[in-house]
Amino acid sequence: MKKVALILRWLIILFSLRLVYLFGRQIWYVIQSYLNGTVEKHVFFGIKIPDDFTQTGFLIVSVVSCAILIYLFFLLYVFRKVIQGLIKNQLFISENAEQLVKISKGLFFFGVVLFLIQFVLRMTQSFPAVAVNKGLAYSASYDLGYKIGVTINLLLSNGFPIFIYALFIFIIAKLIKEGNLLKQENDLTI
Amino acid sequence: MSILVNLDNMLEKRNMKSNELADIIGITTANLSILKTGKAKAIRFSTLEAICMALDCQPSDILEYVED
Image (tube, rainbow over all chains, first blue to last red; front, side, top):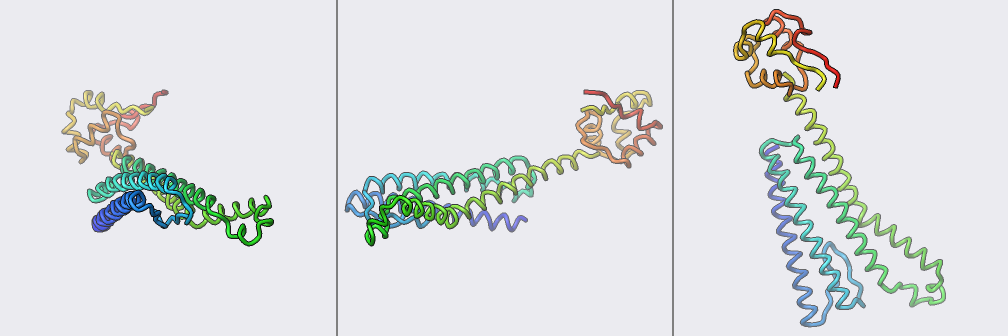
């Protein structure tokens, strides 16, 4: 258990460094967009920026990205506390359960925000069908169908795994809470 | 808690000290204190048996049910 906890601690450090790098890169993109007027094609986690995106829009997305990165950093800090408990062989304690619930809620929130960013960015993109057949593209039924399709695709491809992780961590948190009760009962059995 | 532990009364009746009882039944004084103060979640039959043997009493002399 201790070895696994130590490995996890190193992974957290590496992931934190990755977050710092992504944060720095995003800031650099914003500075560059103001100096050169260029808009980068990607922001964090592979979110694609449309070609015709404005500089203001890019700035808004960048600010949201940076805020999410800071939030992820905070979640890593919370997870680090759980790992520190693991190193001391303290798994079934109420603090761990609370922190894991916090992480699962945070991941759920992260998934929702990621999904919303992707959704808004895709919706602002011009649809390829518009260029081919304007009559068809402008029909309300096609537009609605396309948007629903895009939404389901986004939900399944991007947000869905994060929601599964969040649910999984939430279940682990509940297990630790139950384990804590059993441990307390066991410790206080004379 | 609705189960009261009347260990103090029995100890007084038998003129015995807590650490003596702890030594006889083979538990730590800290655990006996947990039992006496009602913080214990459960008691093993073996512990109860040892206490009854040491104090020459019945389980009902030590444990009492009171409504909340």
